[in-house]
Amino acid sequence: MNNVEMARPAQKPNVKKSQVGSSQLDQQIITGVLTSRIETRDKEGKSYYYGFFKISQQEQETPVIFKVKPDLKRGSSIKLEGN
Image (cartoon, rainbow, N blue to C red; front, top):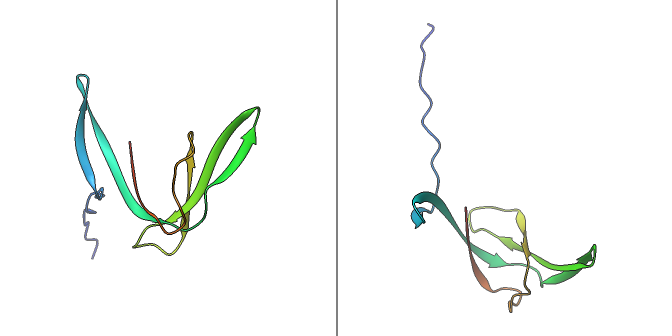
């Protein structure tokens, strides 16, 4: 009647361990397709660049912000890495 079931732990897709100095970090890698052109935005005297991309398993588009303007066109495959 009151059965207790343990939930399965969350799984991180596309995770690889990387070595930085003496610490280990979880390095996330996400691949998708750029669905918009790269736009420029100036804020407080600094420029940044942004666009939207779509992951194959999701319907929504995700914004991506760049510090340096990338040479990408709409429809380009992109690979984002970070932690």
